Amino acid sequence: MPKLLFFSRVAFLCNVCFLATFLLRYAPELKNGMIVSTVVVLGLVVAIVLNTVVNLLYFLVIMANKPIRTFVPLWLVIINFLFLVFQAILLFK
Image 1 (cartoon, rainbow, N blue to C red):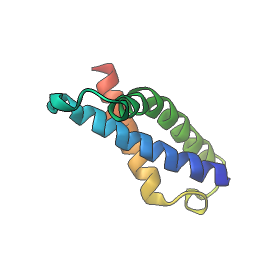
Image 2 (image 1 turned 45 degrees about the horizontal axis):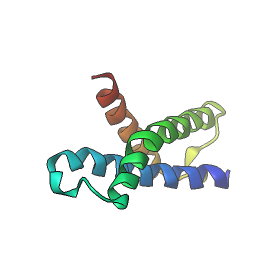
Image 3 (image 1 turned 90 degrees about the horizontal axis):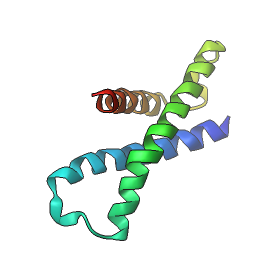
Image 4 (image 1 turned 90 degrees about the vertical axis):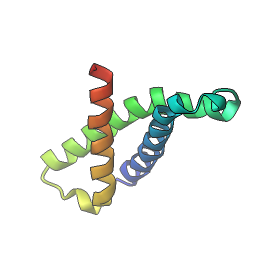
């Protein structure tokens, strides 16, 4: 299950890009450039897909009666889940 830890970390970084993309609405002077476009793609596309997959994997681990703490730190699970809720709210709004 080291892959779950790796993908959890990548999902966390993409979620940070999602938050940065959300905050870019209020900084119009930063809209140009390759770094900004990379952050936007990671934040709007990859974060939503990867975070959903990672949270489904968390659910499968929990349903298999295995402690999630042995694979991924609990703070990372909670943060990724909270980002999933926030993304779902924004997606369906």
